[in-house]
Image (cartoon, rainbow, N blue to C red; front, side):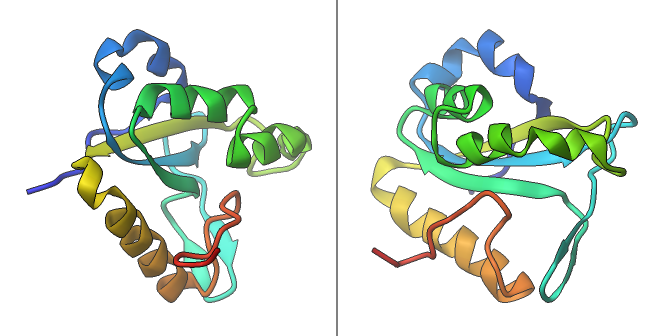
Length: 136
């Protein structure tokens, strides 16, 4: 059975050699100084988990690194919105990530399911995701 790994500081991505070859899903969330997720208001309620972005990759570490550096999709938007640090509760936030190993053949379906569940629950995707599941 597939299970999410523990949440880790995004800076730890550079220490995880195993993720260079691992395939799977990942989520990135925002936390405060006390390691508590920062709730994010959504159309249909509050996301208490602070999820900013979720996705899939056949090479998790490079994908999460690209997010952190701001050179890929959601990470580009995160870097563009660094002014978030001016406003409470985002002032002293940091990021965490977690991964779930998934076979390559199941990646697309699992990602679609993960995004559709979030979309159904909150009537919108996580703030830094820009593609609707199943869309072109």
